[in-house]
Image (cartoon, rainbow, N blue to C red; front, side, top):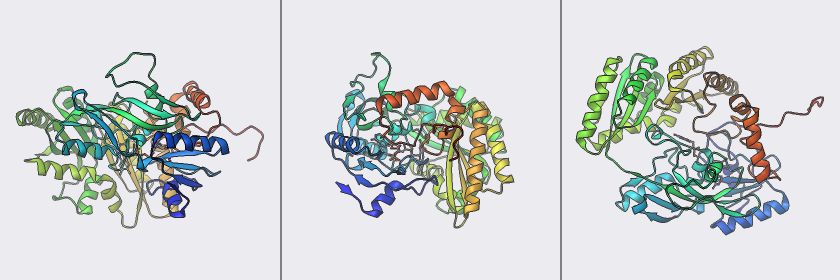
Length: 455
Ligand SMILES: Cc1cc2nc3c(=O)[nH]c(=O)nc-3n(C[C@H](O)[C@H](O)[C@H](O)COP(=O)(O)OP(=O)(O)OC[C@H]3O[C@@H](n4cnc5c(N)ncnc54)[C@H](O)[C@@H]3O)c2cc1C
């Protein structure tokens, strides 16, 4: 299937989730198989056209933006089949356009007590999740896409050759890990056309929420809770402004105290072990000034409490009527998180920018949603994000914990990783894609302009 419908070109070239510069694609193609992808790559090579892979379209840093010279957007959403579920081995094989949420609901419908714990936006798909190195609220227990959730990927390389990075064995020490080469590559090294995914046992969970006087109290409580070794699947920090936004959004079944809060998801083999975890966590958080500890009384209540955290993006935008939101994420060593949040909130207040803050606090990863209504406010938000990133890197952190680089964060790579590491990345890119056709202008920092040229 091929489309040059302006609505398709616009939808695929621009995103309502980010405000980075870019252009429309020339054409959007919808392959149905690995062989189709190979044919598309051959055409792109023949006409030297940029090729931009696209799956769920939920990425946040301009990852799927069109190139200034035009190009072929390869939308993999038609390749959305689960090909094989191997319950005995806790893995499955699927095409790249399948959503993680659909994998988990399929497993549930079939009564298979396994799940994929990577949980970015519900619309995100396996190809995009591999390519952004994503994670989400479960990362504190299960790690990120860079842990071994992806055992093997089939990739169409820029040469048109098709490779498989591994077989299905749970572990392998045959050389270095070529699967990892494509995790976080943002579509710049090849197109993933199939993946073998490891699954985790699905255990009972429940949810608890507690409020704190400050972010520092909350993070200190989390540090102690994590060292207790009890069953914590998620621990999310939601700041006072977030709780205010949730109240205003009106989807919550309760009115929350507008204070810095922690949302916990506990995991255990039985109701008894969940209750035991709740008892340990309650005593630790209260020691650190936590108040109002509320434990869900049943599954429905747990879902309702968690929905308030999951609605972060939409409740955040509802805080300021008529506003849009610039979402961003950075990550620092956990002990530095209170300093980063404190300095960032001070900076945002001084700049007159309203923003909610949500953190995967167990990992030191924090997200801000900066609200704006005018072009002037958009520019102020852009500059505030820049300062936030600089602050995170200065605290030995990273410009992005999970959203990836795209267009928005590429200027920070040298400062964060150093010239040598960035040059190694570029060498790999040049080797695999000497014509620079695969998602050009993303991930790698731009080359410095030649000296003496005024352009
Ligand atoms: C409301 C909301 C909440 C979010 N929460 C989280 C979160 O908690 N954690 C998190 O990590 N992210 C989060 N995100 C960001 C986003 O969901 C992730 O980056 C996700 O992994 C993107 O997947 P996608 O299928 O939408 O990819 P796309 O946006 O389609 O593409 C992302 C990148 O992958 C490349 N790509 C896509 N498919 C392929 C393929 N088959 N082969 C090679 N390259 C490919 C694209 O070229 C692009 O560079 C959130 C986004 C939103 C809007």
